[in-house]
Length: 276
Image (cartoon, rainbow, N blue to C red; front, side, top):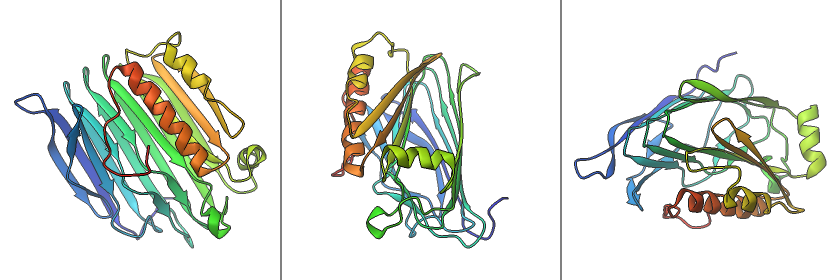
């Protein structure tokens, strides 16, 4: 069932090196509920904050996101605050994402946490294509809901679809649907009553399962934050399940620092506080 009647927004960006080799937005277009702040460069990476100026995603909202990074450029796509999906009487909100990374290019997708409120229905579909020699960090964080308001796992349904391609071949495919009372959600709640989740796909020629980074991430596992790391044909996938939001943020921040150290460069400054 496709969502109808809401905002039909989009975000289209092309990041490329300028005449001096610095990353810049060669093309940009956006429409509500999407907006971008003024980009800034840090350590050779262009940082772009994507903002939803509305209260959040509502019934019928559909967003199309298309981001390409050309050879020689590095882009970090993030957001300044949590995104929310509100209660929906019927229908759903939907986000379709397409990320393309050229050879000798880098894209880091790291949005703030997603909070599905009571009664929310949300569908996210992602296709990421990475050329040989390209680099992608594709991450997300998911809250169980508005925990302080007693809405943990009170959403109606969350549906995720993700395909990751490298050199034209599929190297990862993820499909899952979360709904209260189903085995998937019951398993998560069995680990932690208010479980917070994070996922990070990493594709880079610099990553190896025998590296110090691989071992260091494994060693971050503890009683309040469970971590799993698996090798893809080209790259890794890191999954985190944490007891609370602070536990999740702390562990994800450390994982990202380890990954950037392995890539041989510092984390770009997001120019905001309290966010990894």
